[in-house]
Length: 591
Image (cartoon, rainbow, N blue to C red; front, side, top):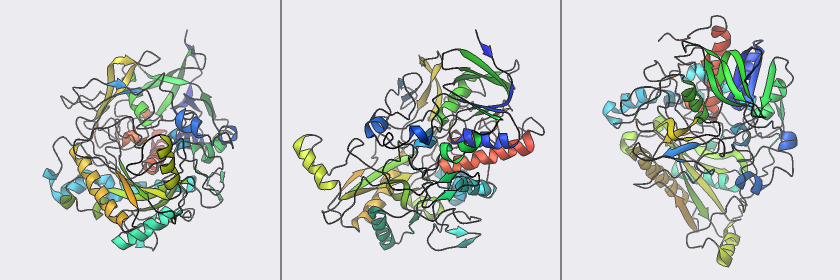
């Protein structure tokens, strides 16, 4: 028997970054908000406290802070004629679970999109002509501009206590930052973090190559900080447990640290954990959501009526909820119709490990998630795409989020993977090596999409989400080009040897190897309902009281980490809900 709860103003699915932001903004507006989180409650104390959290076996092998794939997962295949199989072990990407979601175990890299990233298709067509875009590539402009998002980029950085250095301030270039970024209205809330040895050497090599290196914008605090909500943070101590882990020191921005201390005190806010939402309920004409259905910790089905439904889960599962609930028309790549599931994209990540003699002391166990150095000389409009031969760009950066024996220790070519020779190899390189990453954009294509699997079901009887994705020539060309530039730069440092991980012609997407958690698209924002399920305010074109913030809204992915953009878009959407939708509920953009 289904239990029906008392109606509320808004129900939010998921308690990661987007859910926390929406809950804060809507309770600010006086709404009674219920948040349903499928995982357990988590906070710095006791869940991320020392020494419990600094456990590589628990965090990086047993995946304590990640979603359990035993009840809900995705199936994956390379092409439309292949059979998809379930993703049963964490590899390529790491969806979170529990309060904080992936926002508790992220690294902290906090970029803004470049202005040209937001109008990618128009920019490419204007620079090189329409024929430069390969057949089957479905890239689109975002239906929002950098100038519209700038106040929200700024606010999210100040909520997170982001450490960095402005490169363009009120239209004027300033020394030390990214000279190619969009203009900022004010400096970062905190100065850049200190550099580790690999970052210092990165600056040296980049400068010799003529590149404009700058500090990675990092939501890892360089000093003590109190954000606009009154939430306090302490300076990062480079403990080396950042990616995969919650922060023990209140130094990495997360929903747990930067927003929830305010929400937990509000009578308008109610958090229900171990509450797994299984569908959005719609009225008889399927034009309005009436609430959601979920299973509580005991397995009992519960119905939560609400006037407003916000899907704030991990991007893949936002798409899944739309599909299983019948919100919008599923995408069909054969007929090229429908929009839900369209334009799935990922991130084009490659890597170079550098090994040095023992006089170079670079302890890889020391680490900070988002700190380091990067440059944009091969990104955005700085790159001549016609000469390079591909659409999109990317960044080369020095990062050291921490490393240890359980997480894996990279060794030079020729060192075996086990035995005494492996031990000698590890001893020789662990303190004398570091790596640089090459992170490229990932375009969207007609044959890269998400839909419901016809064979496999989850633990609740619903079809699993099916991912159809593979690397295309554009991403392989980009990887080869960008890694080539990185190798040229690394040669300046005269390493003893290098180990290069890069896509090659014919490379297939390998779901077993971690590449980033930057899964994007599937429920994208657009100018009209013919090419997107969401309008410019992340509102469903079909069901006006459903909003879907997250990286699922990206029509394609740029060269940066998506979190800064996700936060800005969520604040942008929340502002419009508060100032327009609540006064006159209905479509915010006329189709």
